[in-house]
Image 1 (tube, rainbow, N blue to C red):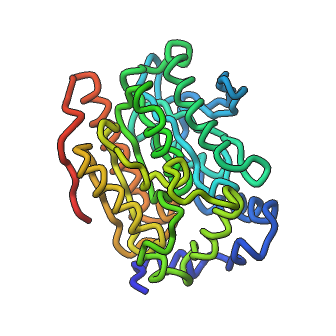
Image 2 (tube, rainbow, N blue to C red; image 1 turned 90 degrees about the vertical axis):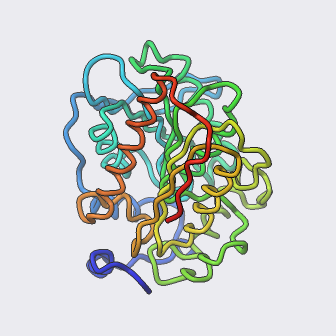
Length: 320
């Protein structure tokens, strides 16, 4: 397995984790919260506070990370964890880093989770949260013209699907998809065979996640599989980060290809020798901090273009 030395060393130092299907949902949630201690705290910010976004589907808990005073650009962020796991605390570090490095406001959304709330509830919350931030921009002190969505892993799926769902309603400046899960049709992708086991995310883990979220999946439903969408034209520009040693690698890179074919500006960066979810280990992996800084630079550029009437269309895809 072509793991980078720093990645192999980190994984060797971490305690072993049972596969997800061998534990209860609550045990898996506890396991991820414990693992999140390795992500280390992010930087101090002028303001970090919990709030609730008022939406048609009810009040949605969120956490606001503000990098400075006044009205700013904003990233609505959805945490990973296979839809069923993860919370505002497990992804606190990456949200702090993105707010600090981008010099923007990050609004992390605590969407409802399966199996208590199955598909498409998490996506309904994601769509409602983005729409609420756009509608309540003045109260939240964010610039509606400079609004982006993003997320990692399952959160990347929610961000991509929300961007599709809201294409006609909210003009987004960018979509940031970090190691995203974009296709429930696992058999289509060679990376699922190549990394079926032996890395922090196994194929069986992904099957378990989908079983919690959508036990009888409509595999071609773009709300579950954003890659199944028939028309991607007009979507916001995108940044996609993939890891070489990740079962999700191929679907992330295929989505970049589809966006490019639809004339959506997209930049793809694959991190050699990295695993899922390397991007969260900003304090322990040089590659993770590089990926976070890269994501921040892409967001800054997108926010600048949003207020300068920069181009939103045209191929911008680069191969890894």
